[in-house]
Image (tube, rainbow, N blue to C red; front, top):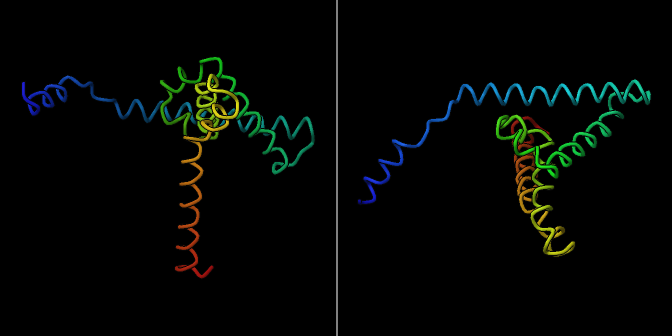
Length: 146
């Protein structure tokens, strides 16, 4: 079988993703994460008498903690398989990427394994986030006068 026939066969047999289903799942799961974060924000505001700015830090730390815990217990990937983009866009996805890399490389030692490999995916997110922010700042400065 030649390469062209094989690629045509693979294309015909590959299941077509349901975009509408994926969009709805991402919206529902992402919205649920947002709702949980908002509930946590109000819990911290009510219990500790924080204002919304002060309550945001412990809320984010709590979301990161639970995402890391669910990753370590093996549940986050099962949720993410159903939720799609609903879990990897918020801070929980970032926590999952760091925790997953740390777990995978723990056999190589704490420094050369966990420490060196934990930010492989996270580093690219941080790098492109900084570059994007810089470019948007330049565009704003040039077109809207700083």
